[in-house]
Image (tube, rainbow, N blue to C red; front, top):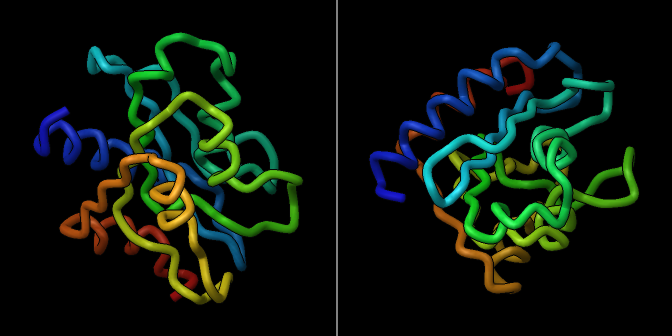
Length: 149
C-alpha cells in the first residue's frame, strides 16, 4: 500500500466512525480491513452490533480467522487498538495478535482520558506487527469524539 492508499482508507474509516451511536465514556471508532490486493475485506465500528463491541473487534468478527487473505491484509483503525477493557475477555490488540494481520494503520493514539496507559501500538510493534501512524489525520478522527474531550 502506498501512503496515498493509506490516507484514502483512513478517511473512509473516519467516515465510518461517524455511524457510531454516541456513548458517554466510549470512543467512536471506525475500522476497515483491506486485503493485499487493495480490496475491502470487512469493516466495523464501535457499538455496531452491541453496546460494547469495538470497531476492530466488529470488523475481525466478519471474517473467519483462517481466511488466507488476512495474512497480507492491513487493518485501518481511527484510534489505537485497545490494550485494556472490562467488557470482553480479549482486547482489540489481543484479537489482532491472534489474527494473521501483520500491518495496522491508525490515525491517533488513545489519550489517557478513559485508559491511563494504552499500550496497543507498543504491544503490536513488540510482536512484529508494522504499525503506521497517520498523525495528519488525527484531528479528523478526534473530531468525531468531541463529545468526550
